[in-house]
Image 1 (cartoon, one colour):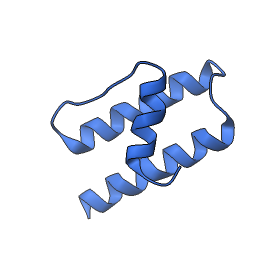
Image 2 (cartoon, one colour):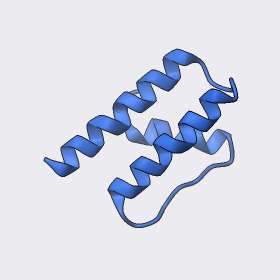
Image 3 (cartoon, one colour):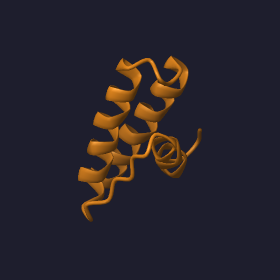
Image 4 (cartoon, rainbow, N blue to C red):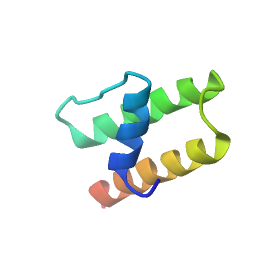
Length: 64
């Protein structure tokens, strides 16, 4: 997993497609969804950590 697109594809495997139109809000919602999926033990901790890192980096890039 190397890009936000990869995170979107991971979420898509669980039937989750997020698009509000506000990029930062989209990223925050993706993080919330990932947390729920992780707490349900449906994804590997390593994948979860990488996805969260990618989302947070993208939020920082957009805010900066």
